[in-house]
Image (cartoon, rainbow, N blue to C red; front, side, top):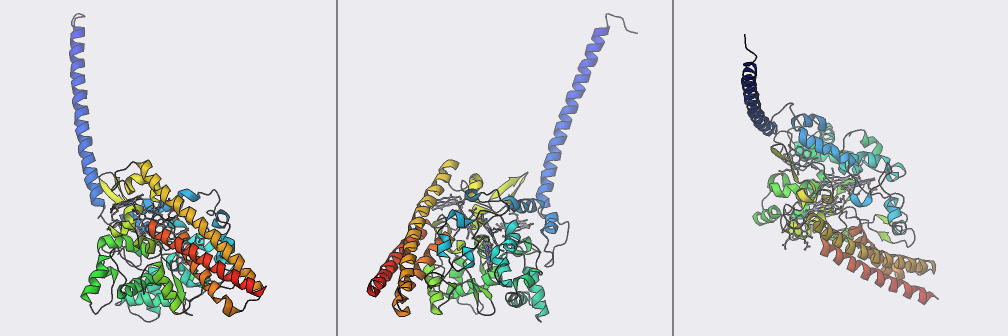
Length: 479
Ligand code: HEC
Ligand code: HEC
Ligand code: HEC
Ligand code: HEC
Ligand code: HEC
């Protein structure tokens, strides 16, 4: 029994004891937490190679891959809400570029692009945006359209197997299936695919190494390697040329990892056309990657995308030549790949992953540009804005010159100048507009190669005014 006088002492010593216990427990718990955290992080780091499911060439569904690589999958899924900063739109479909650049309706007169030409958005939309476009709903299109809008590595292989190429020759099988699917009506080919670009299109399911699987790209880069166009930004092509081996250049065998970080994007972000009745997706690179090389390639067999409704000029249309323009810029020349800016590393817990939410670097300047550039975020944004604003001003100047040329040419046609007389003016229309298009359809708005873009537009303005003079001469002669 304790006396009242003793009570507080016992109480205080008990209290001290309790406090000590609590502190010790808390400290122990703290250390435990720390250890657990370290263990978790180690576990997280291990997860990178920890396989929950077996991935094979038949695993198309990115959700399956996501079980092994949840972080990459999570960021990949986010491309569903990626819009480009300059073309934000509140509608279901992204902004109609024909309303942003009204002269486009005249420039593309007589071509499906005068009906619908939207801003692009994130990868998750690539298949549905194509499905919903009036360019596919109101015009006949082919299976070739799916080459860059779907995960079709397996669909091509299945079709190749059906056509008799055995599984022991996977790349021949892929190529054969591609040839079988390109000429199909789009609606029929559409049933063979179900996902936008997926893990399997850029990664080997076994080793997870980067790979390229688009047959149009494999064929195009092979032809480019055979040319003697300089390739300072692709050292493996230069090395292959020096060795002159019997086998063709094959990026999956010859390219370095850093090169692959650009080539996987070059699979789709390129100029292309559909070759012949077979509608084979073809990249016009046999003479080189510069606009002049591509134009020379098309001129060799007089390729025509469409005949202009107002001037009857046989036109060329360029589409998204990001890879080609990047190839002419200072970043490519310094070995900076698309993935460095568009899929930069980001830290999650103890590990670094490549951000698979492929999007504008302007939405992530610190992880993208500031890895290499010391300037502030605002300064980097400003540098991009300066380039893009200069580019925009030149684009508008070129548009004006072309609109004038089209008007002059249209009156020359109306004044019944003969086709022979019109030839020169039309040739200049074709050259000028292909140049404007090459820069306008390139989605960086000049950034990927500012000086090259300005050079191309300078030529475009000159050709347009020369064409206008030719056309005006004809109208005068007739009067
Ligand atoms: C299988 C073809 C394919 C591959 C491979 C591909 N892309 Fe795309 N990309 C597209 C298509 C198609 C769109 C447009 C989707 C839409 O608008 O619905 C697009 C959209 C984009 C956009 C958003 C465009 C914009 O203007 O807002 C960026 C950025 C982009 N891609 C960069 C890349 C990068 C970087 C790579 C390589 C890591 C890459 N893409 C690989 C086909 C591809
Ligand atoms: C060589 C690869 C490739 C092929 C082949 C291809 N596309 Fe695309 N497509 C892209 C890329 C890359 C983008 C995103 C960049 C852009 O919009 O400029 C895109 C964007 C689009 C868009 C959204 C933007 C817009 O232009 O309105 C539509 C719709 C579209 N493509 C339809 C088609 C149709 C129809 C075909 C067949 C005639 C086709 N694509 C063939 C690569 C391709
Ligand atoms: C040095 C960094 C850098 C490299 C390398 C680079 N890009 Fe870009 N890219 C940019 C910037 C900056 C923009 C402009 C973004 C904007 O205006 O929001 C851009 C724009 C784009 C766009 C339009 C996206 C949008 O949201 O407006 C596409 C598509 C694209 N790049 C694809 C590529 C491809 C494909 C490659 C490689 C062949 C590549 N880029 C290499 C920095 C880079
Ligand atoms: C358009 C091409 C493309 C697609 C599609 C793609 N990746 Fe990647 N992935 C890359 C690139 C580029 C890298 C960087 C590789 C390097 O530097 O070696 C990468 C790296 C990785 C890595 C290595 C670790 C890291 O983060 O750098 C993993 C794991 C990965 N991807 C998983 C996936 C999964 C899972 C999917 C599908 C949900 C997927 N990838 C879809 C291009 C792609
Ligand atoms: C992996 C490194 C790397 C990354 C990432 C990178 N850059 Fe660069 N950048 C360079 C190098 C190297 C040069 C060339 C410097 C030289 O040779 O003078 C350069 C040059 C430039 C130039 C001058 C261009 C010219 O034509 O002279 C601009 C502007 C620029 N970068 C902006 C950016 C922006 C914006 C980003 C992010 C979207 C970016 N860079 C990302 C390495 C990088």
